[in-house]
Image 1: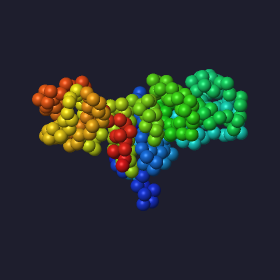
Image 2: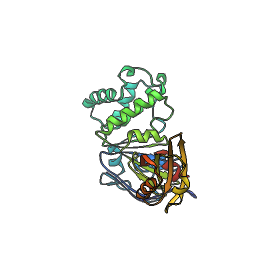
Image 3: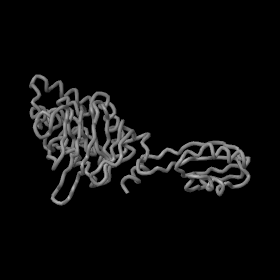
Length: 305
């Protein structure tokens, strides 16, 4: 659906994006993660044809941002970080205005407004002025304008910025529901948000993609080391003997009681068989042995440090 090829963007001497290449598949909810200034918003502005790249290419649904920008804009519903609202209008007047800008036929406007009002939960405030709405409702109205023309692709830039926890949960639920029917791309620096909503996460740092995968299972590509949790019933601490095993880097005692000890073992190669043999030799009964999954937060810190 969206193909990025060697995409770069310079602002004077500052390089915001550096040879970014990726493919966003149809029907996928993709989260773009990165620290402030990583290049997330620049990437979204290029895809939505607000700005052109310095070099490289972007293809959206078979169209180039250089040759077919108007077609691409018609395919995309975009909600920037600061929702583009006219505060002196009522919600329904604002949506009518956006409908006309989007060239929706007059006979269809009422139906489209009704549909997005239901999807975004704003029917109860349809006749209120936008400047009288809470931040959460203004964000919903911003999302409604992105959906009014029933786009194939929805792009959201920091959609939950400035919302309270309840409002964040509501927007997340809306994103999940919309993601069942649309291709979605949104930026965030909130790791839990991407993990809760997305099928895929792209981690950007200093203008480059440094991580790409399922946010619930992606492992750090920058480190060959793994972590293993071992809980045993044993009379004496066997940390030193575990450390002496080949390919073991460090051993830490996480928890210790009269009968049980839990070790966190950082290693490079698979050492489970060696650990099993050592435990048999030391008369240590294995209660648990499992690989420790890297959390998205840990991977993010490692890739963006």
